[in-house]
Length: 260
Image (tube, rainbow, N blue to C red; front, side):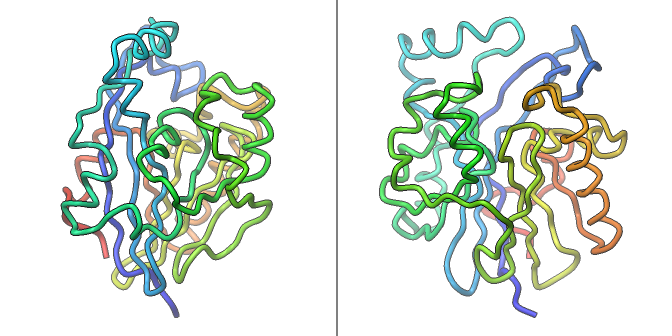
């Protein structure tokens, strides 16, 4: 069986928000700190990057910071991100450049997952076509329109597929129209499912509770994706990696270490 070689978690920033954003109907008035994650996956046929974090320029520039993030208060505090948490910085620490990334796979197009594309010019970008259609129509408030500037060059997907040896795209819509997760087979131990925002927290999985935001308020679609992920934990003995859970993240290998 062909497998990926290693999986490297990258902390690209943090954000504080009301917990109800992650757990629908649960956590009003309770604020949590959440990691903003990306993942570098090395395979025998190149490197895949799942998500790219925020646009550092919008965080570092006071005028842009106020324009893009002040309207989100008080539900969301502006994201925090240092220069050293940009994707090119992590790559440089590994002796790589953006040119060494073969595919950028965006689980969805919200600003904390797709904003960092500006740091990766020329990379091949994959995203689900439904995700882009909704974003370009201006129907998802979590997407910043300027971050779609190069979308004409992206490779749009409409089905599940093998991205690279040992790396498979999973359709997990619900949080957004075209949300995708990744199933990663590794040399040692169980496969890993990078849930993306199909499951922000372990609580989404253990309690089968939908994200706070669901595309067109389709809670059942989001729950169907969560149940599918839980099913993979049983049938494939897969590890499910939630995307915005600090307690879980602290248990992952710390950069530059990896899971293999």
